[in-house]
Length: 555
Image (cartoon, rainbow, N blue to C red; front, side, top):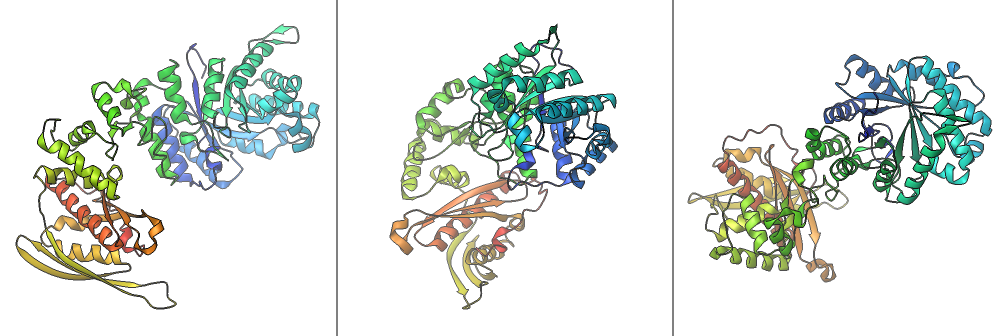
C-alpha cells in the first residue's frame, strides 16, 4: 500500500489498542472483531488490532482475522523494539508478532533521551541498535514496518540531534512510515507544524546522501485538548498518515478523534481520507463503537453528536429555516447526522413550525394555534418542564392545542402504598388505579419493587385488554431532577421517563411538588404516546425486547 496521491491522507485507526487504554473501557475479542469489521466497512485503510502476545485476547483476535480476513483494511500488529542487550531474532515477543500473520507491523521505539536513560535504563547507542535490529529483522521476515517514534516531540525539544538520529536509524533499517508521536499530549499546533517541517527538511539528507524519506505520520494525544488541531497542523506541514481513535478514546484525555479529523481533512481541506460515499457512515460508526464499548455517546461531539446540528434559539432557527449555512458549517447529512430543532423557553415561532413539521403537522405563523402553542410551552417551561428532553410530551401538547390529541383512556385516580421494613433495603409497593376506556370504568391493582414500578404495572394491567400492544411497551429510563432544592422536601420535582416498544423510543415529562404525581404524569403520557405511534404505524414490527428497568431498579 503506497501513498500515490499528493492529497491522500492515510487513516490509521488504533481504537482497538490505544483506545482500549481508556479508563473504564473494556472489550472482549468479539467486541474487537465487530469494531474492526465496522471500520473495514467505513473504508479505514489501517486498523491496529493490538499487541499479539501481550494477552490471550489479542492472540485470539489476530487468529480469527486470519481465518476470516477483513475485506479491504490492513490489520496491523503492534509491538515495541527488542529489549536492551538482546537480539531481535531471539525475542519471543517478536515471534508472537510474526505469528499474528499481518503484512504490516507497527514498532514503537524511544525518541527522548530521558526515556532511554531513565525509562529503559540503557545507553543512547544501544537504543539506536534496538531500533535498527528490530526493524531489519521484521523486514527480513517479509513484514512492512511502520515506526512509531514515541515521545517524539518531547525528545526533539530536549535533544533534537539524537531524536533525529532515531528516525534516521529507523529509515535506513527499512521502515516505510515514520510516525511522530505526541505521547504526552503537551504540544500546540504551531509547535507541531514547525517540527514536522524540520523533520522533513533534515531527513532528506543523511550524511552526504540525499535520501527519499519514508512517509511521515502523526499520532497525537489530547492532554492539551489540541489533538485534532495538532494532527491537522501536521498534515498541512506534510504528514501523510494520521493515527487516532473513534470518538477520541484513549488513555488519560484520549487520542485524536477520527470522527472529527476525517471530516475536517476531507470536507474542509480537500484531502482524500475515505471514500466520499462512506463519509456519511461516520455518525453511525461513532454510535456503533460507543454502543459496543458500553460508553454513553457524547451528545455534543462535533460532527457526530446528537446536538452537533441542534438549533435552540428562535433567531437561529428562523435563519436556518431560510438557509442552513447561516448556522451550520457543513450539511449534517455529509457525515450521516441530521438537523434538530430544539424546543425550549428560548424558542420562537420558527421553532414551533419546524418542530411541527418533524411531527407531520403543517403549521405556519398565521395559524391561530401556533402562538398559542408557543405561549403554553413557555409557561410550562417556566414551571419546570423541559421539552427539549421530552419531545413526545411536546407533540402531545401541540396536538391538544390543535384538537387532534386522541383520548385513549382517562385516569380517574390512583393510590400508591409502600411497605418499608426497618433494617431492610428492599421494599414492596402496591398501586391501585381507576381508569375509563370507552365509557367503561376499570379498577386494577399491581405490585412492584418501587412506587413507579407498581403504578406502571397497574396502568398496563388496566389497559392491556383494550390495547394489547401495550404489552410491548417498556419503561427504559427514569430520571428525577429537583428544581428548587432550597425548599427542602417541598421542592418541585421534574421526572423524565423514556419508553420504548423494541423499535422506537420516546421521552415524556412530568412536573409536580409530589414526585409520584410527576412520575404518574410522565408514565401516563408515555403510554399515550406509544399508543398514538402504534395507531400511526400499526404494522411496526417489534424486533427485540428492551429491558424493563422500572421493574428491576426499585423506582
